Length: 470
Image 1 (tube, rainbow, N blue to C red):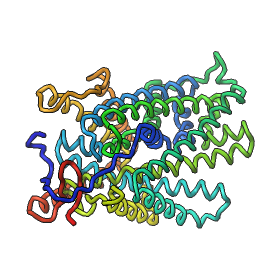
Image 2 (cartoon, rainbow, N blue to C red; image 1 turned 45 degrees about the vertical axis):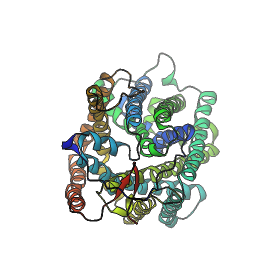
Image 3 (cartoon, rainbow, N blue to C red; image 1 turned 90 degrees about the horizontal axis):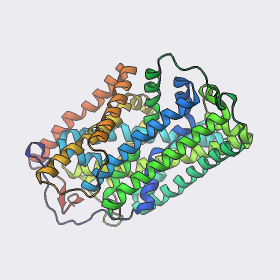
Image 4 (spheres, one colour; image 1 turned 30 degrees about the vertical axis):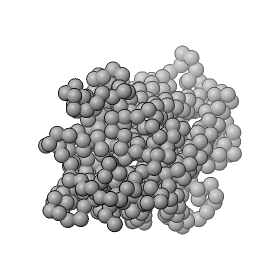
């Protein structure tokens, strides 16, 4: 690491508690799929149809977004092989650009990006569940908090149980999507405007319309990067992490395209644009009220699985930050029996519950939606630093390499910049609030940096196995 980018001091301690390698290739693929597919594919395709109008452009934008996601998987695959450590983007940003950008990434996740997502998805899960079971609206918050506590407890006692839960709910959400797509492809009568030769009017400004439609598509494809957070717990991560990323993203792209084809065949582009719940409308049209009930259950299952994924992977980032001496030392500790960052999991759950009960998570999360793709672009840029160090001989040559380098990562960075700029331009006041929330981490960073360099209690590391002082 360059001297000007050196991270916070690390000290050796005798505690050897470390992460346990329990995540195989199949679980890795399920993490990728579960990290991308939430509720968006069941609800959001209508936004794309509203912006581009025609069936061909609607599918084309989803194809384009899939290409960007696939390039992202290639980039994160090489980065994961180069630094297969817990924390993912935090590690790459720290190694390439220094401790402050890495800390701000982790700070944003802890403050609102991950915890706000946990709150929002927990409430969404509760909303679908009470609708499905006919429970009173007053059950929403208790059910949301209960889901956070339950899944945090599951992930507290081991990554194996957490990934097993993820595998089950990812498979269930794939079953729901398979029923949706199968019914659409086998039972749907093709909507007139979707038939060969038929088309609705093109948007007035094709380029702007496609660009506007690409923003929600790229947000729907985001999430593959979270698997890199648990790289240190994967079996043979140098081999399995890139494979899991590629297989998972390819599976999601296939599912997304089939789902959109189902919507278009069933509802047509105009019907899709007018629908606020395209999955329910499509399956309800094909299978009647039972189809609507089934897809409501499918969305509840999908949100629950996504909630588990965020709760599982995000504490690894806080743990890595604390192990660098940049946060409460206790969060750096791994449980001697469970080999999980238990304090980080509890801390995350507590803050997510506060956000859930306060009801502020929605506005806060909206204000930092650009931050995910800001981190994606910055993380992809670290690949150029690693490659430069490789050419200089300071790091070994990576076995797995991004195809089309340097063009493909540059295209990915451009796509990320487009999403960030688009998000800021659409609501500059909200973006300013989000930027201020993230920049509030700067004094926090210098506080912890000073505390560590001043000889106070700091996390300690030996042979890459993170722990905290007893």
